[in-house]
Image (cartoon, rainbow, N blue to C red):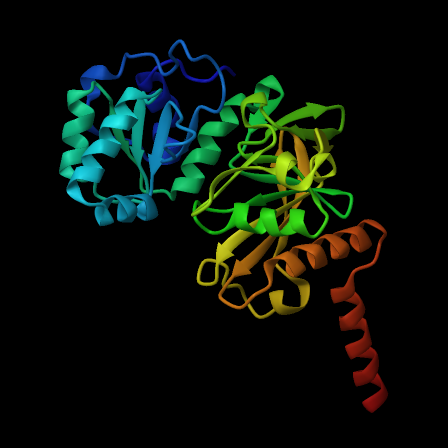
Length: 308
């Protein structure tokens, strides 16, 4: 299924799944979503460095805009309208700022609303490309202990900072921000778009050249995707007590392949680089048939049986 060509087509296709409704600019709905800039990811979070034709704003992005000085906010809106932006989606049931709606209307940009989280909206829109055998995801793709790992999570949670620490510990970067995945047989291979190759963006430091800083061995051109680590705020990752033994694990279908995914809570004081390495080592053991949680439960049951 090809991706929708216009805002109207996108609205019609995803209206029910995403709960879409018009907030403004419906007259501009027939406008094409792609301009002369060509391909690349269709949708993404608000990102001045890597703008997308469809920009999704959730509560975090709107909070960021609200904290800006009026002059800086106006300048950012103007920069957004000069780029490839063709459609705005306000996610999470948030209320769009009146000045943003006014700027979008003046620039001929349609605005849609959705009650779903921004990450869910982006994943649904990104799935439009799955039938072509390729998929672009928001995150950082790395080789950790020989395993292809996608670090995922909402904007600002620390994916790139974590990736930089992992690189400094000897692991290798494939792609920051927008890794491109392709189905090859029974495997999903990930690589970096040419424009982003060698670079990583870290908040406060800007864009860094990993090859220039760490050498050729700090990068790898492509790798098979074997594990997804979803970084989540502690309140977002709350799970029943059973997950204290088993962890928060499930399979995530991508391009028709089930990829193991682990939800890793982020909190002050947690050493995420060590936890990622431990998650990868645990994944390797599970691929070899060992389950630490099941082993622990068997040991507990044997101890109980001995007491009876």
